[in-house]
Length: 145
Image (cartoon, rainbow, N blue to C red; front, side, top):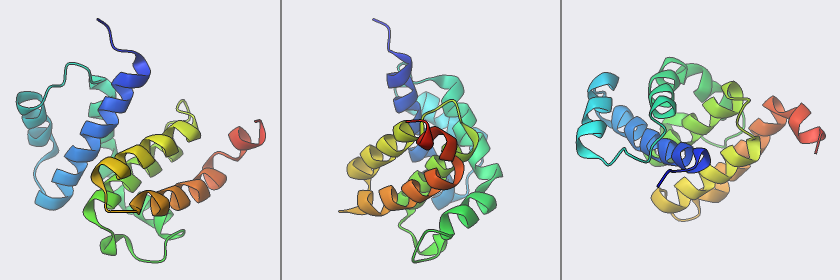
């Protein structure tokens, strides 16, 4: 049975969010985290290239991503719950850099991740921040609907 691209990308986001959370909490080497995920997790239904890209690209832009997010938050990035922080960094990266992914997909995936892993009602906060980022980065996409 093959997994659709959408589902394998969704799985990649989920694993990347968990790996970014681990990186943020432990400061471990990204390559070590990636190897650990491949050894300890079922990665068979994950878009491997997308997972790798998210895991390695988000940390290289973390200062820029945090600055972009901070413009639309009522607190600093350091004050965020670590799960919310990982979800927002991942989603902000996609909003800014992955124009091949529709902004609605990015927002919906982030909301699903926050409902599964985040604090109660964190999805509302994440939705609010990402809606504003979509206005900043995806205006052409939004206006063409």
